[in-house]
Length: 345
Image (cartoon, rainbow, N blue to C red; front, top):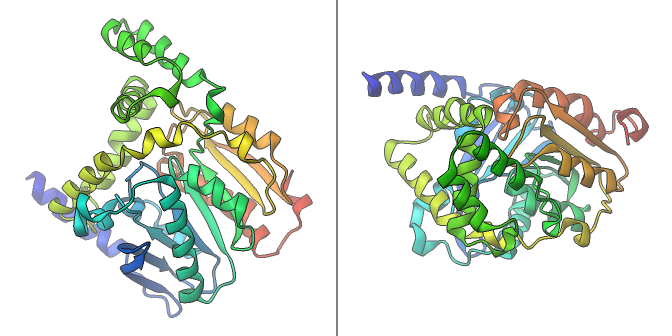
């Protein structure tokens, strides 16, 4: 019965994904990026809409599973979803031995190659950069260094590592474990210490899992949004789901690499419109550090907004709220329909 219900839901989701508009686009294929074949999907109902390049999180967590939830976005934007090395279909094609160099510098270089491919394929001068969760680490660097390639930067579930200055999320986790009487789990987290740059990949992964399972809203989002999206994805067979999860485990090696980053030292000056849309109840990438960084940013246009009743995965739990922010704050700026003063600074 369970597999029958899954088949019915996947069929319904596949129908939901159909793009029939005359000027629409729905294509996906492997493209040679950084010396390996990487999966790139391009979807939208009107090719004249602004083009979004998504930089997914995880690490290793492809956004392809969320397409049915974010289908309405494709009425207003052409969306490029790229499975990075170590993630999704890119990982599934050749497994762990075929992923090549797994470093943040390599992902950054890959992203620039993907950007060049998109600009040529779709005939656009600039693309709109939308990065979520772990992808926002690379997203900030791309936006800061290449305003000539991107029309704006949108970060959601934005990571602000800040050279380890802020340990509020870590302290909040210890407090939740203390309150719940989970002495063993608290001792394990306490033994890690607040310096995330000193953690191993296993500790980094254990910390993230503990955060997710100890916060009711985050745990509910994981079950009702992430796991359901995986299970009912029309784009993933059961074998594909196994590869998806293996890719995430494989990509955990990237986690500790990011923990040494100091976004303030790398720079707060951006020469393109800059937006952060954060879940108001996110305990994994809390809104306060993101807002502090936002306040330090200088940009031609900038805006910050909270997604209501949202934990991590805010844009996927509340895709309509996120779309409303994109349509009212971002799209008018990248299409030149309003001035910066009309949006906010």
